[in-house]
Each structure stands twice: as structure tokens, then as C-alpha cells.
Length: 346
Ligand code: CP
Image (cartoon, rainbow, N blue to C red; front, side, top):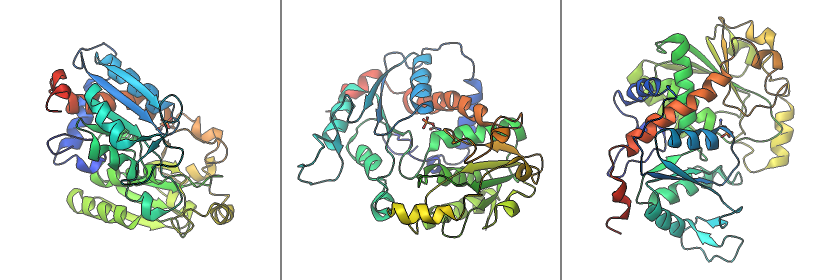
């Protein structure tokens, strides 16, 4: 969150003690008592992809602070959109993000965007093209509701869930456990888990099959965070080994960068790791480990019912925290900004 217009694209922009401040503020905001801090403010929620938690929790968070939301499903109620600059728009897209962002900036005080990766070419997706197009062309804050690269609102909710259990996350052992899945899922959640765990000084283990390493640039940021926070990272290619002694197990599947964009090859590769599923015997290897997942989860594929539904599972706490952390982020971005600002200097 920096610059003249404060966007919220990644937790990496929370500098100094800001990460702790946001979470402290979120705790204060857990109360369901309605407030009016965002009275007169409008937040546009643009979805290029489906959502249950993000959509509902953003709508409820804005409403509970006295603001209003306008929800737009791209290609279903609003025009399909193009984001590449200078392209001749002869395909399905009738609207360019350049125009959509400029127009919505005149109606809204912030624009929140969900845009998953295209999944064809990592060279393109690593640039987070849709979200960055909104950042380029919006004159109001842009909030990332999950992009090709990160899911920062989820990461804040996750760290809050960890803090609720461990109080001080520094030095606590978190295992990010790759799990099997029929689809090559985006890297946004695992990237964000690694970034926020390292920012919080946690002892992170990533357990993933060979070829499923997180992007180089994310690992570089993790190392940078660790230098400041005292956190550590190790990568193991054995799930059982990765579970040993963990205080928190974050299960998540993601696609391999090695087979990126090649669906059949990717599926064939993941077939080799079908037994990478979180089970009770695996959880027994942890140090009373708490189970985490961002949801939605494919039950008995990614993790067994017995693990997801165990009293030690944090999945609903993580989801519940979305409300509080989103309120905290919205207040930071919008509460001090006059409602009339969006109509100025156009
Ligand atoms: N965790 C999460 O972002 O859920 P949705 O995809 O349902 O929004």
C-alpha cells in the first residue's frame, strides 16, 4: 500500500510494522456492530472468475462499514474484457480494461478485481496482466481479490488465524503442503502463503514434488523477507518428511511451472503424486499441527474429511477472518479519502 493512490496488490507492500497494524486493526473490527466509516463510498467488485468467500465477504465488509458495492461478473452481465494494450479487438471482448477502469474510477472509490491466470503461458501470466491493466488505468485504489500471482486478502486472513492460535508467529513451524488435484491450479495462494509466512518470521517448509517449486521471483522475495524477519525456508520433496513437527499445515495444490500451459502433460505428471493427500496419519507426524486451507477444497482428494472437519482444523476460522482483514484494508485505503475525490480532476 504505497504511492499517491494506495493500491493493495500484495502483502509485500505492507512495510515496517504495517502488517502487524493491519492485523491488530482487523481484531478490533471483528465486532458485527455496523459502522459508518465508508458512508457514501462505493466499491466496485469485478470478477473475471467465480468466488464464494471473496464475493460475499467483500460485500458484507463494505456494507458493515456503511459503504455500497457494485458487483460485476465479466462476460455475464458486463462485457467480456480485453486487457492487452494496442490489440485489435476482433475477438470476443467488447470492452477494454483501459475504458472499464477509467469509467469505473468515475463511479467508484475503489475497484477490487479477481483475475486468475490465463494458464497458457507463464511468461505472460507472471506479469499479472489483468490486474496490472487495472492498476495502470484506474485513478482510484485497486484491491487484489486474487490475481495470477497473489491472493493477499486470503494471506492476511491466514496469518490472523495463525496469530489467534500462536499469538506470536515468529519461529512457528508452517508447512505448505502441495496436494494432488485434477486441475493445474494457480500459484496465487501458495505464493501468498510463502510471502506472508516469511514476512511474519515463520519457519516455513514447502513440501512439494520435484518440478513444483514456487516461482524464482517469489522465492527471492521470501529470502528478502526472511533476512528482515528472521524467518527461514526449506524445500523438501517428501510429504511425510515435510509434516514432521509442523505447528501448522497449509494444504494447497498448484500447477507445475515445468508443464505450465500443457494440460495433458501436467495431468500425467500429477498422476504420479496422487497419494499427496493430507490424512490423519500424516497429521499425526506434526506437533499438534493445525490444518489450514483457503477453500474451496476438494474433499478426500486434497485432504480427508477427518482432517478438514477435525477440531484442529482452522479452515472456517480462516474464512471468517476474511471479513475482518478486508474491513481493515478498506479502512486503510478509503476511510480518509473524501467521497467527492473520485469526481475530481478527471
Ligand atoms: N478462498 C477464496 O478466495 O475463496 P473464493 O474463491 O470462494 O472467493
